[in-house]
Length: 264
Image 1 (spheres, rainbow, N blue to C red):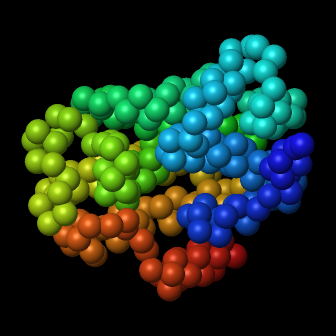
Image 2 (image 1 turned 180 degrees about the vertical axis):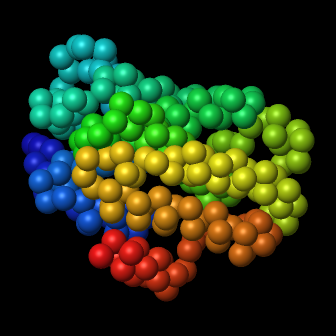
């Protein structure tokens, strides 16, 4: 029995930071973007939740990207999408490598290692989205991958305590040695350093949106909503209290309204 996202009938979850932006995607690509999102999100959730089938499902996608004929809920969607878009097997493989890192709970040693992880985890997803939306210049995918790395670094900072509770650490070991462990109330300097790195990536990716053939408004809003998480970390006192960082709903609504006004 096929799942809803294989049929393209799913909607982006309302709790997702992506949800308001995805509603702005052009009609002719929105359902496919939802399907791609759910493939990636499903695999990520299986791994994060330590589900027994996680390794098998990731392996199926990796084998599919390597050219094997493999049937799984995810590969069926990817096969369909790849018939209509220039979906990159390399990007799919990179995403699988990030998931395998998570399964193995491999230590991230340096900031360079963290950049590579972010590129595989979210830069790859950004490239796949770009291949659905199209780009007007050859470096469009590269710029979008940079935006993906910025988003992944933001996710890491937002979810530090959740990840620690599940035995996962995504801050580089050398950075922890420099600033100390990311303990609530004692991680301000570490977070200042990491926020600056994420902000630099957002700046480097500033051209990404205008290089897209379509969906520019959606991607611009998504980037703004994610970058606002960094500002919320600052407003919250740089991790002075434990817990997942959340931008208040009223502030999200304000950002969305401002974005829509500027897009008119």
